[in-house]
Length: 78
Image 1 (tube, rainbow, N blue to C red):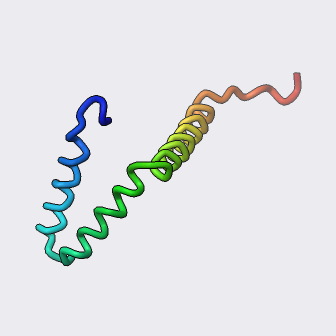
Image 2 (image 1 turned 180 degrees about the vertical axis):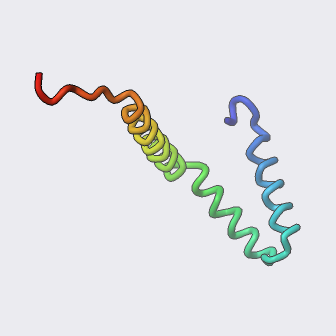
């Protein structure tokens, strides 16, 4: 993501902050804390682990759906 558009992450953070401020149900300290937590999960080893596990889970579910659709029933007595 940084290779294609280095400023994309910063723009996303700014948009998130604006939406949180617009909602008006959080203080500035709570908004800062929420953004820091989201950055921790988006970058570093935690972000990589979450991405790998999420991709594996989506792949597994997609495989199950495709297998259920393309299942061939064998005759019981051949």
